[in-house]
Length: 346
Ligand code: FA5
Image 1 (cartoon, rainbow, N blue to C red):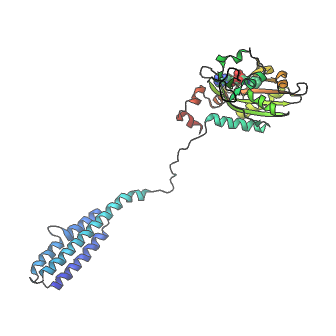
Image 2: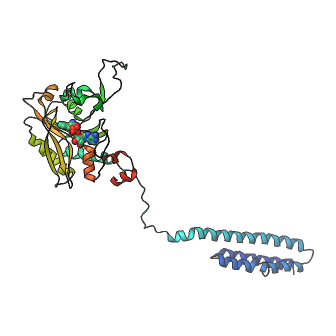
Image 3: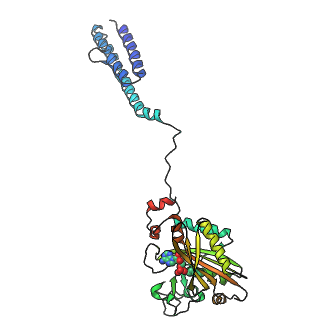
């Protein structure tokens, strides 16, 4: 065989084999093509190799060189075809089963704490009744926590064991001194009544939501730190009927129309008369807070004329209203920070 016809046969073989490898649609057809062209026993390359022996000895080095180049090239074509099919089988089934209409996986995002949600809702409801939100400090002095609320120094409510007094009262210079004003964590949001009345002239319609602190033993309805909502309305000719109407409207908005509300006679130094406010909604009665007509001594303490102005005040426990609304039977759940519990309010 002449060198020219040998090279022509090599070229034809190369084109045909490369095309067969490139067009193989799956691993089986590629394997069949490999056996046909490169098979060790009966592949066409083997036949071409045999043809080398028929080349004139002078042309054999050139023919051998060309043969080797072809072999390397065609093996590379086979390697690329194998890689292409492997890649295809990895992406293929998934690509075929991709359905763009299936909704995506929802990312889990946090939610507001149930007490925070409740406070927002209480502010919203009372806002619609004309009450604006006011704030006061959590670290209080005795005037706002007791004195101006008609709680004199000898009153048991001021006992050191019933309050969180701060360890060292500080002077304005920052040094502890025995004569300095005592400070404590406020035990009720009624302190905000005094702060607002000191700075405003009637009419007043405010609520204040916030944390209060008492050394109470934690149980299903008590916690040493809890939240209250305080309401205060001062104007001319305010009566207990107004207090009851506002609390009933509030309870119906927050729970539902089938909520029941009752007043029980009680005593608070800063209201006269005073009542405990109980609510019942789809279950037994529960004490939600205290309320009453602002005591004339309190009005006087902030410079109001009790002959001209009257008003009512109330203070409700936010954990208790929130718990009843959601059927939570133990308010300690609100403070465990167990996400399985908290997620229910998302
Ligand atoms: C008061 O705190 C009065 N300042 C309420 C008030 C305001 C009366 C204005 C008159 C006028 P009392 O101590 O009862 O009242 O607390 C009110 C409510 O706070 C309770 O009914 C209860 O719902 C809630 N509460 C009291 N102690 C705790 C506690 N340790 N943990 C959770 N909630 C509590």
